[in-house]
Image 1 (tube, rainbow, N blue to C red):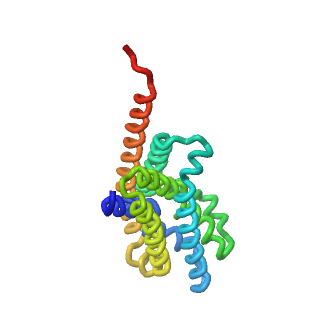
Image 2: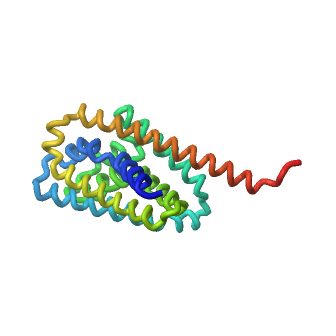
Image 3: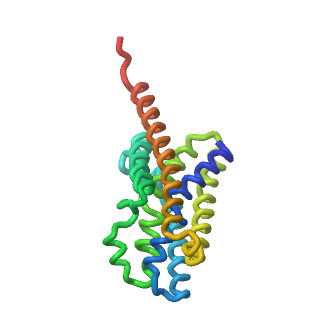
Amino acid sequence: MGLEFALTAIASIFAILNPLGNIPVYVAITEGYTPEQKKRVIKKVFIVVVAVLITFALLGNYIFALYGITIPAFKIAGGLLLFTIASSMVRGQLSGTKMTPAEKEEATAKEEVGVVPLGIPLFAGPGAITTVMIYVTYALDGSDVAFDLMSIFVGIVIIAVMSYFMLRFSDPIFAKMGKSGAAAFSRIMGLLLAAIAIEFILSGSFQAIEEYWNLSPLVV
């Protein structure tokens, strides 16, 4: 699939991680933190995002095999999950699959918020994990497996680095964007994510129909 696949995968990972849209949540959670504490929190977010997404990218097929999950079923379920997240983003809401209000209120440990709830589930949540695993299945079905897989791993690192620097400079960014600007950006990312979700659902549905048709006995 090549360069087009790489760009699509990176754009999708960026949309679901939504670092700019997550800045208001980060600012609210780390209010009152010292600059050093914020740096340590951001480092933990970066490490968690890279570790979680790459781990699921590597182990996704083994997880499918272990639980007997078919690729079409996962695409459809993943697409539905992504669509609910996208719907929440378009409406300017924080999806319950990413972080609940209770989790936000319980985030009292100064530096551990970099792991939970910021690292998981705000950034590397179910939607991000699902997106990465689905793109790995696409890569394995393509003609240039090595390049496509590498592009996914590189994309994860690139978006994690971008998220790192956006959080590092979150105060000036948030001052310029404000809540309305961040909300507008999230809505745009939500529309993009909704389109990606529909593509996952359609691809999974057509693949499931094709597999069912091939396995079904011929009717005379």
